[in-house]
Amino acid sequence: MLSKRLKAISDFIPEGSSVIDVGTDHGFLAIYLSKEKHCSVLATDKSSLCIIKAKENIRKYKAIVETKVTDGLKGLDITNKYIVIAGMGTKTILDIVPSNLDNDLIISSHRNLELLRKKMMEKGYYIYNEKAIFDKRYYVIMHFKKGRKKTNYLISPFLTSDKGYMQSLYDEYNKIYLKTPKSLKKIKVYFILKKIKKFC
Image (cartoon, rainbow, N blue to C red; front, side, top):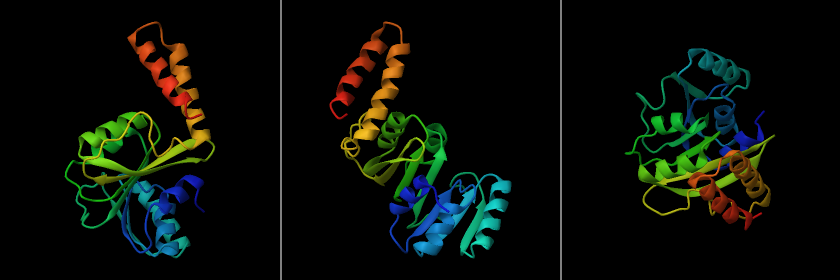
């Protein structure tokens, strides 16, 4: 039922936890957490159609999952809950996450990971753990906790031992480098490439 990406996200959540799955879409992650990890789960989405679809799947798999139509974390009791935000762009995720949460945040963005790390640190969070998973393409799952701890937001120390991911990161930056005209930006990308190459 779960994709490799969603299974990897579920691995970040301890058994028996209380979880809010923000932007649940089809509800498969919430269903898995309920049935396989015995979590108490609230599945939310701003789309009422997505919640209807999620409810159908919840009934189909006979899971116990609450659902709610809401935008982000608005109107939710988030006390002592793991918050999962996945399958969205970095800007949307940053708009959802305020600076005053004490919750564990499990986040997976499709793009702009460097910006996500940087802005989350500016909001007062630090990266507790990260994992890259290949599911047709590479996805990165980040576990943020509240607190101050400096981390390299360009090259995550949690991912440098993953040769496949580091090669994909190198290829991504190399495309940017080749397309960028001669400028200070091109020089900056060149030095980033040199740093990433050490781990490929």
